[in-house]
Length: 360
Image 1 (cartoon, one colour):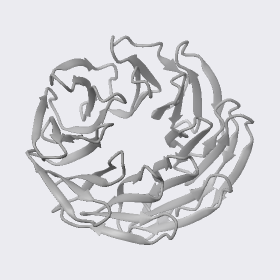
Image 2 (cartoon, rainbow, N blue to C red; image 1 turned 90 degrees about the vertical axis):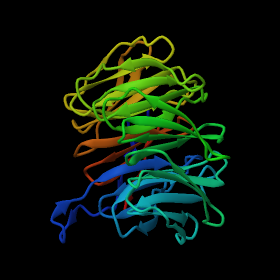
Image 3 (cartoon, one colour; image 1 turned 45 degrees about the vertical axis):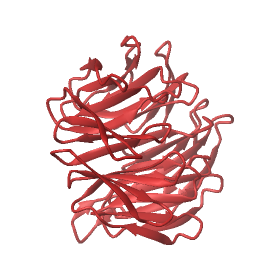
């Protein structure tokens, strides 16, 4: 579902993913959603082994990408022309215009868990359960470098904002910083007691964030390698984390909590706790201007919040099942949400008009 942030109206509902897999006797659900950098397209990934591309303006389903395997990660290229997915032991690159599979990146010896484009779109980084990261050339498909050093599977990878460094999180309880040009391991961040499954650079590239399986988030200084702060505000596993574009705030939610928290990165100060959902908060996103927060919940709703006051500004009703993922468009004009009800909805922020329902 795509929502208008100001009015709370549903702009679009995207339908098309299958809801039941007869062969495996399981219920499918949408667990990956993303908006293209220019906000023109929406991408949804499902346990039905497909990716679906939607035109935001018209509501039309443009493409179905059949992955022939469970999709573990997806990413848009910075120019919005390509889609990258992690499937099994491989990565697949798709052309959005033609819906053709351009390239399969083969080389990992186990499940690929994370994929990322470099900021300039020339390279791709992947992390795998084979304990390695790999750097690939997008144009040729050639494997340029293998980063070895982790003692466990690599669950998360990220490029620095300037594209010169890579960050990886592993089940070996560590985070590692790598030089993209040389492949050299620059630093190992130690402090987690359990596996690290999510890592990210702050927007200014000065800090690193990591989340482990024991619900602890840590903030690190990239230059010194020192742990600046450790946050244990949630009593359950952290399920979502989002950062403001100015690098000042981050938001996180837990897997059994009805609320989420926003903290000031530099001071560690916790802003007012955002309470209002009646069930688990699954996903949080901060607006590009850093003024608002959007949350999705198992109570079937999205909520819009004022970050400074903690006030709930709006409730978005429309999904018939739990909301699993939310995101702001790059220009802040739209909100997108994915749900167990197999739909996405698009909402116009300025008018609050429901622009379209996406039927697949």
